[in-house]
Length: 547
Image (cartoon, rainbow, N blue to C red; front, top):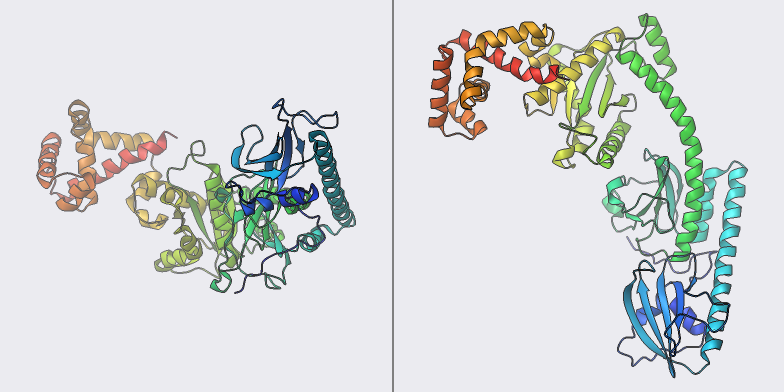
């Protein structure tokens, strides 16, 4: 697809560039100066500062010039002008004014008095500042009037006309709220890769907030430029503006107009967010009541669910997911927010799915048309989770998720039980280092029974079976408990158990022989193995009791 260069930006003041400054001041660069580069003329100016040949200090010969510099409220380069008699030296730098990074310098022929030149330069900068700020004020006033009249999102069309750039607006759930195409963009929305918070250098809504690089999902549009401007503030990221330009294609004046429109759009989204937050809190309250069985009757559950568009007369498959080992105090919160964004994106194809985020976990309730056989539970769960699993495959290992699935019940009165089962499946799957991404409660076998027994009863059984071995491990540090668990979990396969423990088979045989001696039991006995395996599993369960 062809890429049309954005030339002039419609209805917007011309940028304040070094080339325009030289033209207005009738200064001609010495082209033979080896330090001169033609591209310097296109640099946008943020500040002008002056120093005379005699003093070397910043000054302007009269009180109209500030002691340090003349500034524009725009991003750009710092231009320092030095009086060198017959020549004028221009030094150009970028970055913070206090700690600039040199971009280059060059000489211009100079025949005026230094005082006259400084005065004329100051006059020009003041006119440029007034020209830009006046146009920007009129632009902002126009947008504000549209918002006041109830046409909030329509200001995107005005922004497109002003910048001469196709653009669109998303909310924080990546829903397209407004699409202004017809130039570089198609007339109607096309699929894009959702922006990631971690891809932005800054999430503050500032004039200098850098644009993020965007991509399209359809290969047909891969050559079409896309940049993101995050709409962020004290309420977090509420949306994004997508622009049909490269990151560095918008000049500082365009960035100023974009920023002014972005501030207004942010407040429009904030108003909508306030209403949404109130509704969402009521929605969350209902789901918490549903998950913790805080209703008097099935009829109340179903009638309340109907108000939220849920058909709770049908069975629901309950799934709980989380990042294994996730610690909200140590892990980047942006990572978890991106994960929630991924979940929201995946669930677009399943609009009837009920989704809740709680305590750094996600809870999903999938409605089914009716009860299904026990043998189909696993396949059904994986099919329902497949859009999410596919999207999660592209994330780093430390952001991957595991899912616990509760048993399926015919009535919404048992959703709370399925929820607890899904949490237990997730906890036990992580506790026993199960390799499956999706763990069903029904597949946990004897561990399901152990969860419902008294802790003291389980502890007594563990000590009866493993007491001598636990004492031996404390005194000799031979890790016999760990060795036995790996051996039994490997169905007695020495090679597999050795690989799990990173032990040579002979070392493993020695440890097993020692364990049999300490316990005074025959490890080949089926009953012995069963008792040992249960006792060893109870040892793992103890980590859950401490919570």
